[in-house]
Length: 293
Image (cartoon, rainbow, N blue to C red; front, side, top):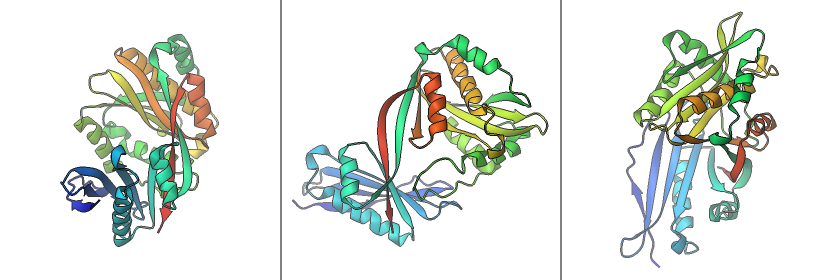
């Protein structure tokens, strides 16, 4: 079968990345598969590209995926990337394909879900109300208030050493503009961002945070984003405290929500223990692969 690979224009360009795209089509012009390459451009990740490749199930094992893969890898080299990462469901066709292409497994993730109807509201209230000497919880919706913006941006360093195993992920560099842009992106698609943060009382600085993105209609499942505590403040139970506050807010503020979703590296035993204690249950797994160029 004659397969045509066409490079497409992709308008998905942000301050931190841009995408390249390809379409595979058959002799009659019917689409067979596609590939997208996210090229990161911000400081700290400007060595990295992320591949998303899809082939129609009926067209697999006919060379479509290989042609798309070759086009994307060639583009990554032209962009002077050092690493290409790609993710696939554990045991899926994509998992087998990436392994066959010589990519190495660098990270395994487990996805979990908390069914909010099963959440113990009384236990959450007790957890949130339990004193943590020297700290207090605060929260806000949407963009961080101006008076907290600098300390919140600085607290994002808590994610710098999150377990990523062998992934050449680099470092995400945060400043106030990036914090505000991320919140604006959530609002632009109609979703609601809620942040719970831990403040060190002696310095009034934010030392930890957890974020939850709720669908705009308040229904279905919400998605946890980052949760982190700065190194000098770990071991004080702040992660579990903030996460309980986030769950309680979702339970009481959005009665139409059904569940909360998150994913955690299998090697991140601390966060896995927190999620387990709150009642999150595994739904599926995925594998991160990397090609070193």
